[in-house]
Image (cartoon, rainbow, N blue to C red; front, side, top):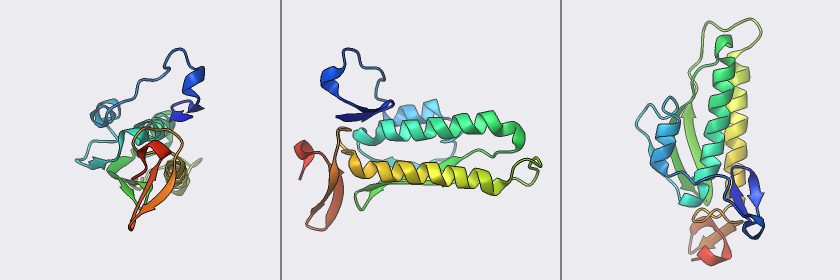
Length: 150
């Protein structure tokens, strides 16, 4: 099983790859507003679809609700730490929000989406995207499938 944009997918059941994996540079091109600041992206290729899905969800929600004053999420850093994904970002507080929404609602939504993606990373091999599990190699924590076990 492999995690892709549509969730867990069994490669043996697929005849056509539904989503091409994007490279790290492609994330910057695909989401220029989110990656407008210089930021470090240091993760394995297996987590790229997870980051792509997170960015897509955040950008679409922002664009749809921009008229309500939702501010643009800016990515500061994406990395692996203690075997899991860390996605650092900024959500500027907006002073002129509509009466129907609060900045804290948007910030809470963003935090929840990022927290979910970070949690998912603990079951996805960072190298290939297959199902993985947390491992410890002499104090170095990482998430991998059996094929990428150190």
